[in-house]
Structures are given as structure tokens and as C-alpha cells.
Length: 71
Image 1 (cartoon, rainbow, N blue to C red):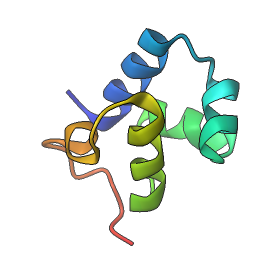
Image 2: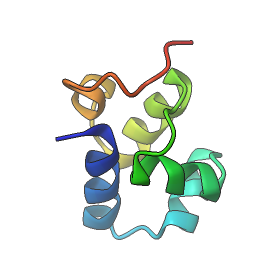
Image 3: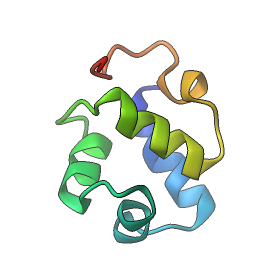
């Protein structure tokens, strides 16, 4: 599963809207929307924050996907 699909699936499982998840992670809603659509690659810090809020490890969230920018 791609990073974009994992984020969207986990967000829905947790019952968050994109706006709610954006607020909890301090990531803009348009950026989160772009991540879920696979149109943008998140910075590593953003992926770590998403993993924390979504209750999974960073490694699980980005597993087998090169769509995260290492910084």
C-alpha cells in the first residue's frame, strides 16, 4: 500500500476529517490533501507527526514507499 493510501485509510479509521488531522499535526489541510492524493511528498518530520497522531510507527506508515522526503 502506498503512503498516500495508508494516510487516508488510517485517517478514516480514526474518524478524523482532513481538517481535524491537519490541525492535530500542524500540517496544512491543502498539504494533507496533496499527500493523500499522492501529488506531494511529505517531509520526514511531517510523516513522523502523522504516524504519531494516527497511532502507527513511522516505519509502518512509509513501509515500501519512496514518497517521503528525507530531511
